[in-house]
Image 1 (tube, rainbow, N blue to C red):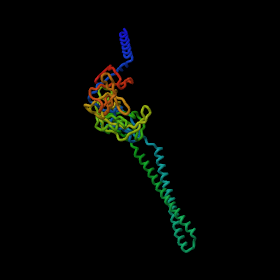
Image 2: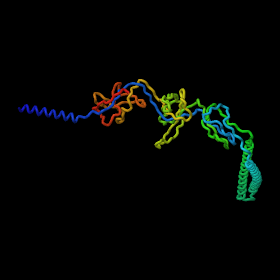
Image 3: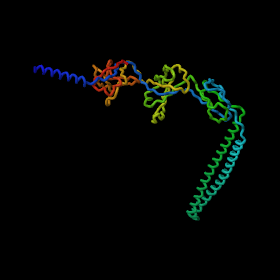
Image 4: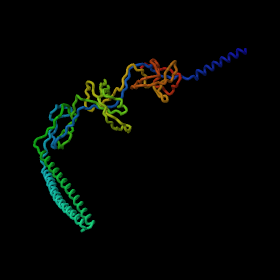
Length: 393
């Protein structure tokens, strides 16, 4: 009877222990896993870009006058040599002519005055030079003192500098006369009764009419912006740390342009000069323009259209891939959680090139290994896990 009681108590204790183990046993953490595979990988840098005409011209007024109203509109095609605008000459302004004539007369009078002063300075210098030579002879004969001789030398030097200054004044007055005559000549040459034509330098399309209505213009006033449509390119400003990876000839894609299919492109040039740009967060960034050409049809894009530029800086096939969502920092190393027999194991990995979704694994994993994606804080090394979802990509 006593032995039976012991057996009963031992069985009850074992049952209680088993219940406690089942109650307090850690619940497996639900996770999702991905199978490591080999595949194709592209390393891409991406920025916003804008289309622009490679051959872009701004036609400006070459003379001052009255611009006639332009009958063309933005988008119209023109051929090289076509007349874009006409500029009628401005009426002769008697007041301006009188002002220029008076300026010339004043310059001539100033030149005469400078000549007269120069003549007087020349005479004074010659007299001072004679006095100095005479003083030297008298000093040798001990007729005058050293002080008198020094005074004569000082007067001669002052007269020489005064003569030099008067000659410079004559030269300056002569330049003023030349300037006044040139202004008068330009004013008279611009008095043409014939209108001046502004012509297209190349075949292209009108991008923008800066001045369409009739108005008075001066030389250099922008009138029309003209572009050569077949030479359409895209400029995108990349961070300099990304731009150093980009080389001419690399493949690129234009996305988010309004169509469903990316437009193929190729990098033509990375501009040599960078510039500072303030980001949306107010941070100063060093950026550089990357110029890309379309490969094929631009799909109806025109000047100053928005696109997203993706430049493929590296590309490889048969690369061991791990999803970036599975990789995390473990001290100074990169690591992932692998799953074997329902247990998570932290595994250090060495990474190579990085794509937008997958990263290249150089060491630490093998094809077919299952890794946890988006591991939560509950996942620890050797923790029991329950795979709630698994996919190979």
